Length: 166
Image (cartoon, rainbow, N blue to C red; front, side):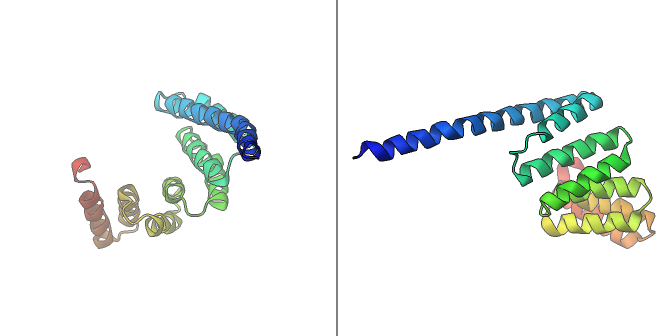
């Protein structure tokens, strides 16, 4: 009788093994894409991210992080429309992901949509109050809007959060 629960546990573990292997494979591929991006191989990174995104078993939060990363790659290739599309899809899947708002804000800022960028930086900071990069990015947006005092406050906060990078 004691063997049945053990057998059931073993069968469950074996059934989960392909999913775990697939997950490990996608993790390795995402790391490969990130390394390609760091080396400046943007096209390769975008291709790999796209291949990983074909995996229908990816959980929403994981899919969102990959879409965010591919959005960053599209942005580096000056394909802002595609970048924003990936960021928007990531937000739909995982609206609590602060980095995607920060990254979309950077693209919007570059496109001259400064007020929209500020809204994204605000959202990133609401989700992650200690996000120094979002403070710094919002400060840059405030500078473009001529809101110097707000910019100084945000730059100061960014420095407080990461004094070694000042």
